[in-house]
Length: 400
Ligand SMILES: Cc1cc2nc3c(=O)[nH]c(=O)nc-3n(C[C@H](O)[C@H](O)[C@H](O)COP(=O)(O)OP(=O)(O)OC[C@H]3O[C@@H](n4cnc5c(N)ncnc54)[C@H](O)[C@@H]3O)c2cc1C
Image 1 (spheres, rainbow, N blue to C red):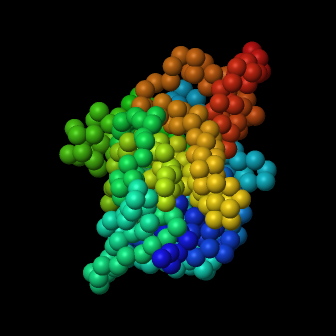
Image 2: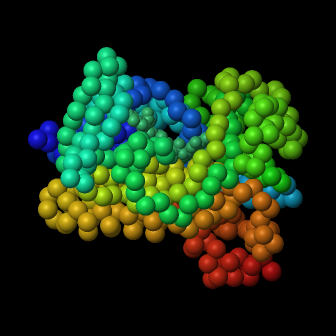
Image 3: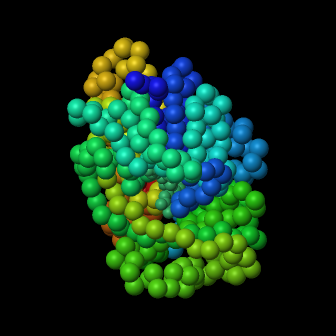
C-alpha cells in the first residue's frame, strides 16, 4: 500500500532538507507544499554559522554564494552606554549570511528534487489519514482541485508552527510561553552594512539590520507583545519612531530608500513531542520560539539531519522507531533548551537584570569575551556554557 517511505508536508527549511537527506540514503520520498517556489514567507533570514555549516555539509553552500548574498563577519550589540562587537563563528565557519527566503528555500527545494525526491508544489494537504491509531498517509489537492490520497511508512510534518500534521496527531506541548514580542521588517537600498549585523537594544525596543541579496539591507525591530494591539494601527510610524531612539542609525536610514512594505508578526513559544505512530515533526512544527535570536533556520536544519538519521535507523531496522525517535527528541531538547530560555528572556525586551548588566559591562572591551558573546547569540556556543560560573568568573577576573 505504501508508495513512499516518507511523505513530508512542507518544503522550506525543515521539509526539503529532510526529504533530501532521506532520498540521498535511497528512500522513496514525496515532499509537498501548497506554496510554489521561489516564493517569500513572513520571516527574516539571518543564517548563523551553524546553518552555514549545514549547507556546506550538504554541498549547497556554493549555490548560495552564487546568488551574490554578502557575507557577515561581525555582530554588534549596541546597549546605549556601550557596544559589544565580536565575530559570530570560529575559524572553520566564521561567517553568517542573510539570504532572501526566495533564494534559500528555492535552493533547498531544488536540492531535494535533485536528490530524487518527488516534489509537488502548489499541493495543499487537507487531511492526515489515521488508521487504527497510526498515521498512514495524507489527503490533499493540487492546483487543479482534484483530491489525491497518498500513503507512506511515515508522514513528516514540516509545515510550520500552525502545523496541520500536529493538529491532527495532537502531540504533548511543553515549556510553553505566550507571544512575547511583535516584530516588523522591511528592506532598504542605500544602507550599506559592510559585513555587519547590527543590533540596538533600548528600553522596550530592539532592532537589527543586516545585508541581504540585491544590495538590500533588512531592518527588523520589535516591541513587547503587550503593545501589539495599540501599535498595529500605525506600524510604520512606530517602526520609524523606534529607529529614532538611535539618532546615528536614523540618520543613515534617512538617506536610504525603503523598497518594500513593512510586514511582521508575533509567535508563541513551545516544544511539541516530535513523533508518534507513523508521524514525525521537524522545524517550527515541532519547536517554535521567538525570532529575536534568529535560530529557526539552523534549528530546522538540525532537526532535518537528526530526524532523517532516526528514520534511516528505523527503516534499516538498526533501531526501533521508539528508540531512534526518542534519541531525536532528547538530542533536540538538550541542544536548544538553554537557548530557548535565553531567547524568551530577551524577547520580553525587559532591561537585563543587574547581574547581567554588570557582566555585559565586563565583557565590553575584552575582545575574547565579546567574540564569545557574539557566538552565543549566533547559536554557536550554548548560553549554558557562556553563563557558567567558571566563565563568568573568568570574565570578571580579566576586567578587574
Ligand atoms: C518575523 C519572523 C522573523 C524570523 N527571522 C528569522 C531569522 O532571521 N533567522 C532564522 O533562522 N529564523 C527566523 N525566523 C524563524 C524561521 O522563519 C522559521 O524557524 C523557519 O522558517 C522554519 O522552517 P519550517 O520549514 O519549519 O517552516 P516554514 O518556513 O513555516 O515552512 C512551512 C511550509 O509548510 C507549508 N505548509 C503548511 N501547511 C501546509 C499544508 N496543509 N499543505 C501543504 N503545505 C503546507 C507552507 O506553505 C510552508 O511553505 C523568523 C520567523 C518570523 C516569523
